[in-house]
Image (cartoon, rainbow, N blue to C red; front, side):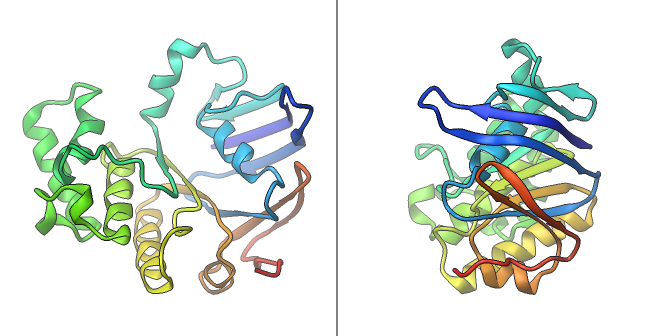
Length: 228
């Protein structure tokens, strides 16, 4: 599903954040991306949804080469990719229902389908009863659940999560991970950058470790491998 070949990313300030990355990720996998701060994890993640463009090499996602994709085609690409951020990025003036529905409205789905699908997705993340509340009325964990619901409401094949538990307390982090596990069991590929050693060591999945822009370890059912 995802294939990177000889991928390099050098920023204008001279920093090389990707230094010859080769990797394959299959449909339905759950992959943790780990490594020290400044190792290139965020660049690795951002290149997958074309927030960053590689300086050299190819990145294929579902047969589309992101390295040569025209900017006008990026929104189309992102319809099949859900992205979950550390800081939620919810629209503060919209309620929970509206924040999730927005992802379907922009691709002009039918109102009847939107209502059905949004409520199904809110039920999955345990927030059906808070559909009319504003983000400011929710806890951090609840806001992250809304963010996850928004990322999966259009049933993407791939969900990319960048430190999704970074701002959450341990108990809430486990609740969020349970949701990601459920999404993955339904066939969605998940790639998650994380610093959470306990989660990686407890909920075992493939681990890709990045240091100085290079993949230094790629293990099935791996450990975190760093002091945290």
